[in-house]
Length: 151
Image 1 (cartoon, rainbow, N blue to C red):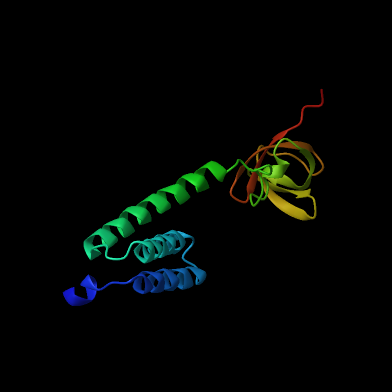
Image 2 (cartoon, rainbow, N blue to C red):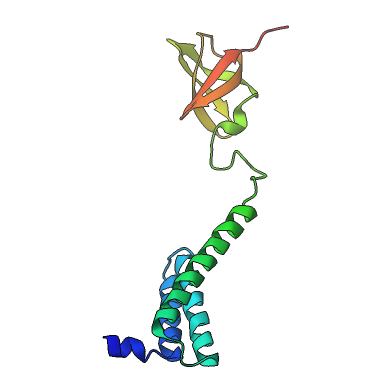
């Protein structure tokens, strides 16, 4: 094994880099991309400067892997922007603050409203069918409502 390490060539590093990039295609989420590029960079460096000891090659590979991973992590964090649609995938959030007529009376703290093309369960004070309510919050699939004052 030591004999093989002492004769590492640029082809070995390029093969490792290619293998890591192929594995990345199968869904590693970006992690193997940067390590594969680090292996390819070490391969390119050993092609340009032959005779680099294998210990230095592995040290370069480790340092480049960490540097490229940190670069990728920082770039991902800086590219993350707040969504222009914060309620996306949070059904019911779009109803908060809006008014609706009760579709089914609130009895025992529970009733229903028709919002859009769906009927939603609501919780709030007991009210008759047709009473106007305002959605004030959401708790899972339940919308919290309060009566709308007639003023």
